[in-house]
Length: 97
Image 1 (spheres, rainbow, N blue to C red):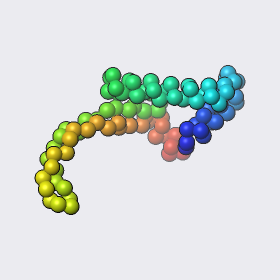
Image 2: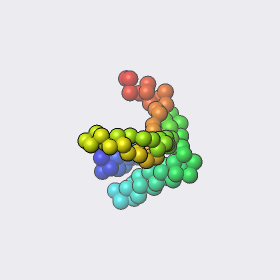
Image 3: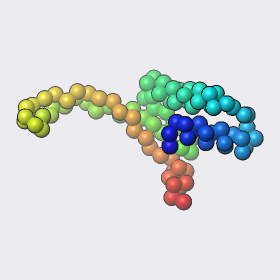
Image 4: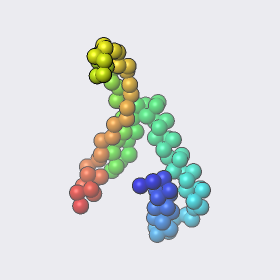
């Protein structure tokens, strides 16, 4: 799903549920604000939990020795941070059908 498709899906669901009518631009701003809030939570707290959907957490991989596969030269692989997602039981159940 693209950002544009997400915006249209949200607008359609709001319309079907009797929610407020939002323009494409306003809905896009809401989508951007939600993702910015999730990113901020990950940056500050290292995690974000959405009930019935799942949890996002920051995972740190420490620096470690490695090897350049082309030259065989020993190198230092730097510390890195990635985001991991663990789906909630409800999301897993919804995907199973």
